[in-house]
Image (cartoon, rainbow, N blue to C red):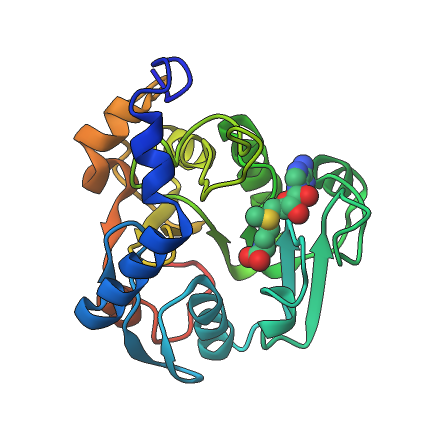
Length: 256
Ligand SMILES: C[S@@+](CC[C@H](N)C(=O)[O-])C[C@H]1O[C@@H](n2cnc3c(N)ncnc32)[C@H](O)[C@@H]1O
């Protein structure tokens, strides 16, 4: 049962947790302790391209630097200043159906993949935040991934039922939201033994997927309760330090 189906329990508490003053306090705690209770590890690390605070952007830039990737695709851009322009890659392509977004291609990801014949070294999935769409984005991205390429995804680790609610808007406002994107990732954890998959514990959970191998989990029609009971195994969560240990050498093309 997700947040909406559960009758929106404790709505006032969740709204308070995402109010501006509480967010500020949370961030301050995060800066002191190095871990934001909601978003994960925010500490500085030595990445391949320099020393930075851990974020989705620095994880992507690290993979690009280590593997000399030159073709980056971002699904879901909104404002290119927030991420796309921060990506250190020779060729960057952003896709977003919103005409007000600063994307290169004004299409949904499904429409884009239908007519796409380019290959990409790295695809960042951050478009429509529903499980079914993220599942399709994963499958379509695998179809155009160059040998040695990776898929990365945002919002894979919603910290509460509130953050994993079905729709962004609550009472006319837009408090922090991860949606049900994690369910698309969970589908691949259950059905694709030919992939290697992790969620890095930073920036609301940054997913990483590439051809490889994994022991699949036994999970069909996952609910938020499944996630909260079995978060570590379901998502295969790793720390930023583990990510740097695993991914600091260029991939071999067979992804062993
Ligand atoms: C969370 S924002 C992206 C943020 C950006 N990647 C960043 O990190 O700053 C999500 C974007 O996905 C777009 N979007 C929604 N449905 C989409 C779809 N089917 N295909 C591609 N993008 C979609 C929305 O218009 C919105 O601009």
